[in-house]
Length: 115
Length: 231
Image (cartoon, one colour):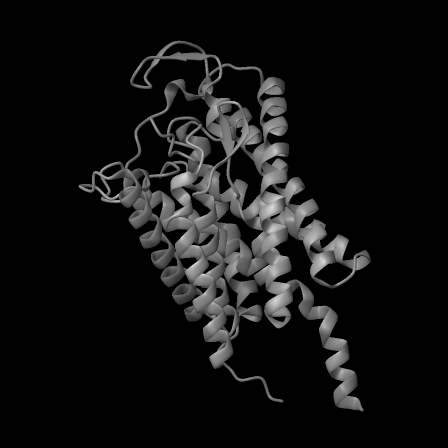
């Protein structure tokens, strides 16, 4: 890896860390396009539970990983919401970079191209 | 309550159809790995890691598109332009798998559905548009930005209709499909415009700083290199 590519990667990762670690706290809390469409037609109670109507989300089930320490983009046990979201986001960026770069490094073509 | 779920949850589409799409996604991803091998060299692999990490970060940034409705980038077009279609599909899949397993976002049962829509359909649509548009548009940061914008809008709407197809096959309630299709398409045009602006800014910036790292510009550079060698 050339030194210049190293600098580009470091800069890019820094931007991603800032976006996931800081800017994420200013993201909209509204349901996204899919979720909003899935909820349309149902009425919801104070805790977000479905109280009536017909909508795509009414047979929705819990996530198998709902007890993950990073579930719902927060760190379990950290009660300051901004810190919790920010740390979870930063962790996600580093983990995703590691798995993406590492996984594709393993499948890259090995032989040097004859010049 | 913060809405943190961004992808298809468990139980929206029934088990058998979800299982069929897991098989479909695995099969197509296997093809992607084979084809990606030809593209992946010592430079593209770390670049693909960065693209995955960047898409993960930007997917956290929900932006308001209508009162009470938000949207976020899916990332297929961005990935296609920076690392190519095969590696790009693997990048978006990596993000979805990390989100599902660690962040409890996008049901584990629904992982095949989510990968099919966002990593496969969205990326394929983005690739077709990018390949077509770059034949006619200038191969500079501006042309790349316009390409990224237009391809993102189409790619996001196509991905949303992938969900409609899956719901038609295995939806767990009896709702009008034309209504679902129209509602999903309408809101995803708006989300696509948001994604387009983010993707355009990103690829134009990379094209300005390091044009050699933009996969979509590769094949337009090669002939020049050959001429130089010949001369």
